[in-house]
Image (tube, rainbow, N blue to C red; front, side, top):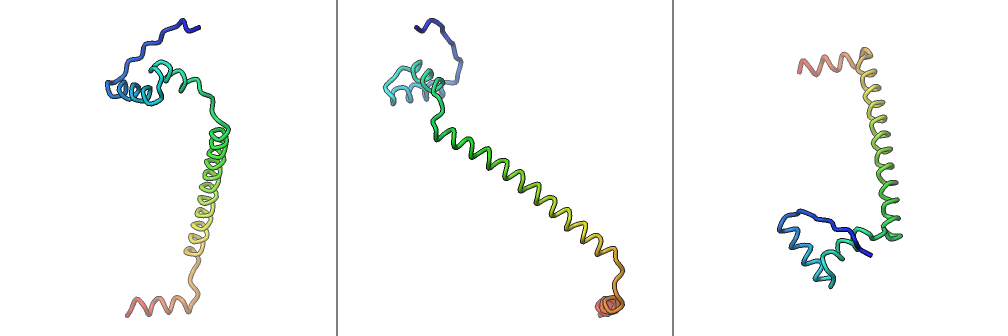
Length: 99
């Protein structure tokens, strides 16, 4: 038995939307709100939520791995840049700068 009342303030546009949805479904606005709020998620919705969670975790893992790989590549590049050039490479660089 329904004995409690809920008052909801909304915009005129949202009120019109609720009225149109209720009319489209052939129910009152109150029944529309109750049915949509009391509805339990379907198996497909639960599966989608689970897959979404797995995807979000996989994306986070991929981002972490990518960052680690980029950090490692940057460290290698820093190390290579810090090494002195062998004599032939120094001569080639000097020749390019004179040209």
